[in-house]
Length: 374
Image (cartoon, rainbow, N blue to C red; front, side, top):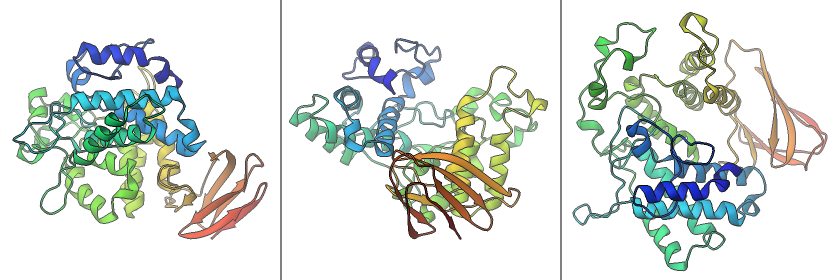
């Protein structure tokens, strides 16, 4: 994340080029931080990356030194991002509340949408965090108040029955042309025109569900199930980043068959040589997704942003006899081993003792101790 602090001036230059204040981080960055994306759809509209960076900083802070992590350099990145959002958000009297117009969320088949739920949620988070660390990042009291106002008023749209809507117009789009998707060895986008993609309810990857994964404490299983039932049948999984997130959420919802099928799809991306495998390079972000699938999905560990206590709620697939992995938790190095009979957590002697929450039951792991939980 040091790269983001070092390239803040470039991000501010990117914002100025578009006529905005603050810092607008590149969708595809060169080594100095200047926007280098050749495709206007992503370059101009997939702006959530600036707020994603603020979320990443918050995750690191929660997993390491807490508020001490927000040095002046880090706080400036967060505040300059909030300044960008303050100038990027539109306030149109007929709308009655702030809006983020003309954006692209994780679903890259909806290129110019209004009030995308994922983007709005991330922006709200960036604004709220900037209000918290504002004084370190050079924000004035008036700016902090404005950050808080925008964060509170920017909407996350819902249907009358409570379904979180991907964007304002999603339900007015055409039905997808899945009947034309005859060759399942090829992506959906390779078999239909781009204009059909852009006017239809066909997702490239998790969008609302991605938001619900990142903010898991804020959404109930019922809300996630509702979103799952609506969006999954419309999702093509053309992105290598989609399957892992769906598998993780399937673990949470007790959908064991779905969790396993999505795991197979994600884990095979770089080893399925019948479909090319890593012929043009490995899918490095998907590799991270596979790690997350094991840790957040099958082991059921909550992120440090979700829980200050190491929380474990496993959903080990029947096909696995055992999974094990090391983990650094708030400065303490541990090893976690899961079988169908029990979970063993070993403190490897680095850091302090830690609290554990296993299936809702609290335990204490001392330095150098190993405990078995059943």
